[in-house]
Length: 327
Ligand code: NDP
Image (tube, rainbow, N blue to C red; front, side):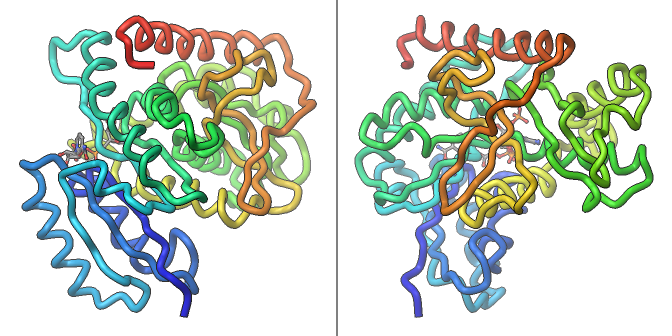
């Protein structure tokens, strides 16, 4: 039997955590041959709730689940971690300014980055889900100087999956007919879902839909889907966010299919004019457990403007956390 992989989940007692843990334990994160040990991090007030979830995990008798440990201390929770899913974050509450939000999250992601630096396994892979995800990932990465920056990523896979689903419905095709979807930029309302390289049954998607639909329906629907779900469900998306986190890590570890790519927010090397060091979403291929930004795509004027606007927002967030002393 193989040694279990240590998977640390923060915010484990939250909504997304509840939808995520059972799928990790049943083998959907790393595959049916890989046992996992779950390490749950919560704030002290939520430890009891995490214990309840751990009891339910026990009661599933998952053959791949080697154990569940619960922590309220980041250093302990990240000791030996192979896969870190940073879900817990400080939500924006009424009357909270953007700077307050960034500062509150800096207080969470700075020590978590330091704890990963101190104790993570050599192969650690980090996915930040908690918002503002790209900038939280940047803060954590900045405090883990001994871990390659490439190991810190943020989630735009839910946006990617939402874009696949909207396009499939529009063209009445199964999602499996679609390749090369891209989300660029920040996981925020400025994100840019790009159909100019997406292929549907081998033909460019942007040429199969009206410009008006692409600009005035598709892009805003994908970008505002989270708000639409809150409106309908009375709670934010959780199962679909958890599913996207599973997809993100699964693709990173097992690779993208030949002839396809995915969307991941990863540290920029300056590709496509995105300033080096920002954690921005790109078209990415994964192979042998490593990701690489897809190179050489033509970017038209419309896409250029959209990408630049989202990247400008990321640069502003970086400057804001930098002036708060969080980088
Ligand atoms: P959720 O589990 O619903 O959400 C967790 C985070 O994921 C939020 O920051 C949320 O952002 C973000 N998120 C990213 N993408 C999505 C998406 N598509 N849909 C919905 N959310 C998304 O939050 P809960 O409040 O239920 O749970 C959070 C838990 O985290 C609590 O149990 C809390 O105690 C814990 N926590 C743990 C910390 C730690 O371990 N150190 C630190 C802080 C909190 P958004 O707010 O923008 O929706």
